[in-house]
Image 1 (cartoon, helix red, strand yellow):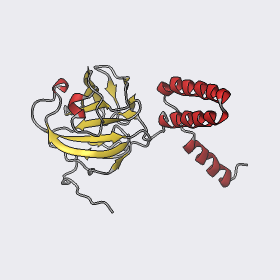
Image 2 (cartoon, rainbow, N blue to C red):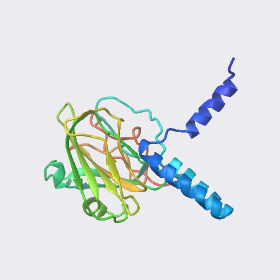
Image 3 (cartoon, rainbow, N blue to C red):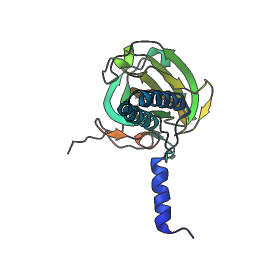
Amino acid sequence: MTSSRDNHLLETIKSVLVPVHPAGWTFIAIFAIVSTVLTLIWHPLGWIGLFVTLWCVYFFRDPDRITPLREGLIVSPADGIVQRIVKCAPPGELDLGLAERTRISIFLNVFDVHVNRIPIEGSISKIHYHSGAFFNAALDKASEENERNSIKITTPEGLTLGVVQIAGLVARRILCDLKEGQSVKTGERFGIIRFGSRVDVYLPADATPMVIEGQRAIGGETVLADMKSGETQRLGTKH
């Protein structure tokens, strides 16, 4: 009979050995081969190569998440820091109109989970890829000038929301598995941005954010906004 101690150990191992996103296996294999070659050249170099290979495995991890599913909730599409919350006009390619919306920008560093998730149930109304520069994703101008992939989601109630995957200074590849017309569920995986990036969310009109700048968001779990709540925008301080 398995003891509670053994069950705890098994759960701990599972929490560390999370699945790897399919997009990562090519990179992991390349790093592993290079590490082997470096070991043959000079043993200490092999240890460096091993460290980089393990970091690559860590970068492409794809953990399961527990997504809140109540109607009206908009969850974070990415792990990272809520860097900016501003009112601005959404990119023209999203066809969200000219009126300003609340934009929540989430910055992902190279140690964050980079798998992206659907923020709210609906259908994919539009997908538009825009080639561009590779400025630091932390800069505000990255929203307009960097390479990006813009996604418009229409909810069953007719609300519209925009999600923009933005490449950063290091990130050079945006992957998106969605197709126009596709039905999606909240928390569902839809893509990945390799090696540091940013995700912008353009909330539906009149939606009030429930996060604050500087807060860490967890993709598929952290609630960015609640369309059913009358709560005013939150404030916060660092302690």
